[in-house]
Amino acid sequence: MAFAKASGYTNLNSGNFSPVIFSQKAQKEFRKSSVVEDITNTDYMGEIANFGDSVRIIKEPDITISTYARGTTLSATDLTDLDFTMTIDQANYYMFKIDDIEVAHSHVNFMDLATDRAAYKLRDAFDSEVLGYLAGYKYDASNSRWIIRVSGDIPGTKANSSAGDTELLAANRLSITTFGGSAGSTTASATVDALTSIPIKADGGSAAITSPLELLNRFGRLMDSANVDTADRWFVADPVFYEILMDESSKFVDRDFGGGSEIRNGRVGEGLVRGFRIYKSNNLPFRGTGPATASAGSQTNFGVVVAGHMSAVSTAQQLAKTESYRSHDTFSDTVRGMQLYGRKILRPEAIFTAHYNLSS
Image: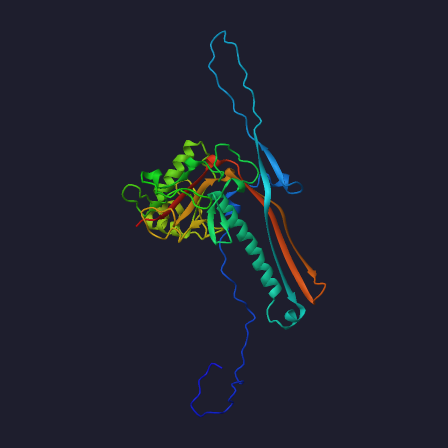
């Protein structure tokens, strides 16, 4: 009963003249954008989709170029057949049931609502796990935190023997020392990364403090130095980084984005920024209170942004199915679904990360 009544008023005293009406339209939860399908390739999915749990990928052999002078005896290069393995090792599922009485009495279609939500949650879990993998992290659900990946987390075999346990090259993981700052004193452990974050603010500042565009420029230069193709480069930012990127310059928005395009699959705008397609995601890993905690560089509160090339990472989905069946011991329908997939860093020289936080 929502209406107040005067003291002593007893007409229709129980308040039943005003029934509760339930809307036939249900409010849906907001959904995060998914970016992984836009920044990875599926070159090997056809080979692994129908059978087996892994695929061995042969690397292009290197060739030695030698100088030649008249009369020189030629020497042939021995071709190598080095390989690495991509493994299908990730599986997620959901299951729910709805009783026949609930269906008969309900004013909304909970079956459709729940199925739609479950499909989104599977996709979001896939997106979050793969983005964490690209950044060198995994989610520790028991402690509700992101932790650094270790050697036992490597799916298959590393594409580059020089890569660390994260399958990333150490030189490609940018921190405060990249821009002339001093590292903190914390040492690496099974869960904590030893890198100190880069303090970032719009338009940069003093030594060890850089700007969003300066960081993108550094990513671009490092990719150029590694001979990474200029086409199909991408960069994934979290909302904090994206905000200071927008604070950098109003000219930046018009020149590089070409106006105010809407977000589609996490992508912001249709143009390129410093040669990168820009994506925004809430699924990037972070530590502690995240990058919004301002400091002069931190090993406990920071976010991670990732830049790469389309050819650098492959994903393969071997199984994605949804099925429903009648319960044997109740009058209800059960719906369940499963997704089985794998992911692999194919070219670690074309993946770059940066630990950052807002500058104090």
